[in-house]
Image (cartoon, rainbow, N blue to C red):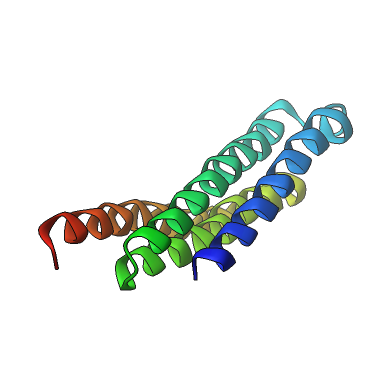
Length: 126
């Protein structure tokens, strides 16, 4: 699992940089400032959680178990739902996509908690 998370995290990082560059160069003059800001938030969280996925890969190699794996999958789901919905919202203007963003944010939070649990369980010897 650690190798899968590392590969996906690395590719996600590359995609996050590409999304940020796309916003800065291709969208800057095409979107209103508020929608460009939404896209930028999606790219920022995309990059942060690409790094989080690398941390989950490391945790999965150090403390194998369901909590580290859950963290990795939650970061993947969170990136798709949170950042993906913000990208779609900013490009389409469809505000209803914000409901999907919320689910992605919850997945991010759950991923961080699962990562903490993986470390806690290892410390406790469980």
